[in-house]
Image (cartoon, rainbow, N blue to C red; front, top):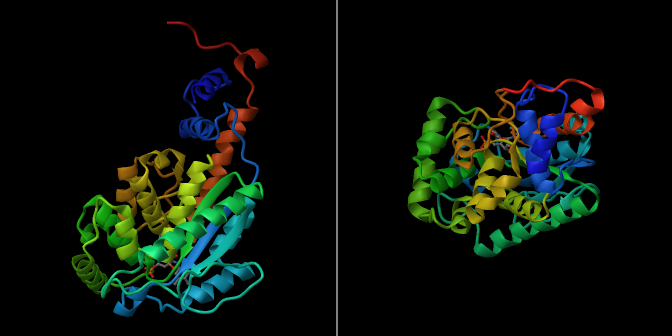
Length: 334
Ligand SMILES: Cc1cc2ncn([C@H]3O[C@H](COP(=O)(O)O)[C@@H](O)[C@H]3O)c2cc1C
Ligand SMILES: O=C(O)c1cccnc1
């Protein structure tokens, strides 16, 4: 990172004038362990799973939308497909817990269970399911990296998962659920109040331990969130930078960082979502979002959009002439 920062000083621009692009290049140098980092191949890993808590009426959309959207991803018709085509990123779709049978040649079928249990009635996942979900995340990341990918974005699909993200982040950040809970897919103010009450009941009943991220992920998490936590852990272990997306994928990152705080150094926050809890997670992790476009979709959309910025940081870092090369005079002393 020191060498990369020194290289930045020599490029033909006033020191610091590329702002956060400079920091990004330096951070990528640290992650890849080289002063001139490169990104060759990008993927977005989208994990899909259902949530028993949807039976409490916490989303504006029915749970059937989860499998329907997975098929839409596979057909190339979702927002993430359009943005990934623009960014030239491969879309990797994983069924880690959709509550409907799904088969497709491009689908990675690793269903741990047909959805989580209803956290308002008991723990969402068993410990075994949690570890199986981690394992799916590790393996999907490994296969993706073995195919040559060196930048990962993460995304999710799962109706009801803003409720799980609120429960995880309220517990780990030790904040009242009300401050972190938003409108998700577009529920009314009244429905949001109901969602907060469901969340309070689920936390009261399950008593997730804020000092134990595994306990939190099992009791009030979900399969796609746990799978993404696994992706993040495995990516950091392999020195692969990860672009996190919105509130839900950031709750997976929060859990990963609770397990090992050094993981934070491998993460970039693609954007800040409209969900109120998202900003609180990013502040806690000290990750400055790259974009703020009032998005609240998930799927990895904000993360894939930010790939363009990471690449811009490396184009300037690697392609610009130095003062010496270009014969441009450096800053006057004093
Ligand atoms: C058509 C459609 C496409 C989506 N793509 C992502 N989400 C997003 O919305 C869901 C979370 O919001 P909530 O907790 O309110 O259910 C997740 O599936 C998330 O990825 C979608 C939601 C819908 C309806
Ligand atoms: O922040 C997100 O990623 C988000 C917000 C609302 C609905 N789905 C995802």
